[in-house]
Amino acid sequence: MASAGENRENAPLHVAIIMDGNGRWATRRGLPRIMGHKKGVERVREIVRAAPALGITALTLYAFSSENWRRPADEVSGLMGLLKSFLTRELDELCANGVRLAVIGETERLPADVREVLDAAITRTGGNRRLKLNLALSYGGRGEIVHAARRIAARCLNGEIAPEDIGEELFSAHLHTAGQPDPDLLIRTGGEQRLSNFLLWQLSYAELCFVPAPWPEFDAGELERAVADFRKRERRFGMTSEQIRNRTGASSAGS
Ligand code: FPP
Image (cartoon, rainbow, N blue to C red; front, side, top):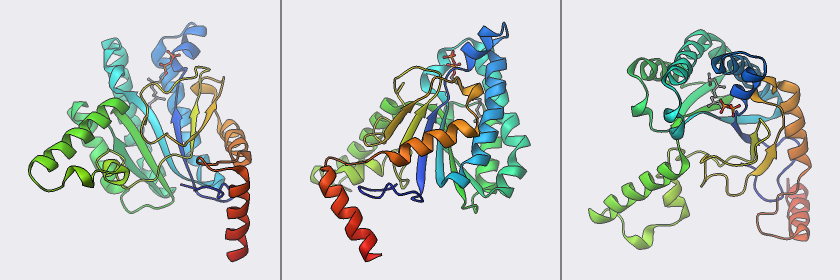
């Protein structure tokens, strides 16, 4: 969202989060993995509540990847159940907090009852403006890019567009995230340092923050620390520090 030289204290932020470490958190306690996901839902609630006060205007949560379908059937159905109950129980609070819900991913693969609850929540929160909450469900970055390429190829074949029209902007407009700004900051909890097929196109210029705490322990204080660290970073977008300083000086002198 913020562009070069605009990583100021109050610039609106889009934060994307890979909520990892639920299973390990539970296993370490001798609990079934689903208990880690259950605890993870509590952190989702806390982070969504805390986000706007930190200047976060968009939050994209990796809740279920296209690869997660390969997990044991009871874990998959447990996760679907948690998602459904979260959307049902939290809907009033999401509305009261000005949260607008959206979903990215191959939602047609989700069970019909989950899709129904999701659609209802998206419709009901459609007018809210304080925080855009994107849930990545049955989402995979490579699949999203291939899907976009297919749609663009089809439009070329039927003569709607020519290959020369294809640029970054047009390509972005064919992704699930069409019309949304790219994330400024990616947080991954749970100690691993990889992207796991998340927002491969959109994270090109995001700042990366890897946190050792597993998701069930990632509370509002952890989010605040990650955002404070992000605000200190200089985002250069391929330019030099000097260019960034001059731009910042020029924009604040002009505003
Ligand atoms: C990764 O941890 C986490 C997931 C695959 C699911 C995340 C889901 C939630 C936090 C709950 C549902 C979400 C919402 C929005 C209500 P892992 O199981 O891979 O952890 P591990 O690496 O320790 O095994």
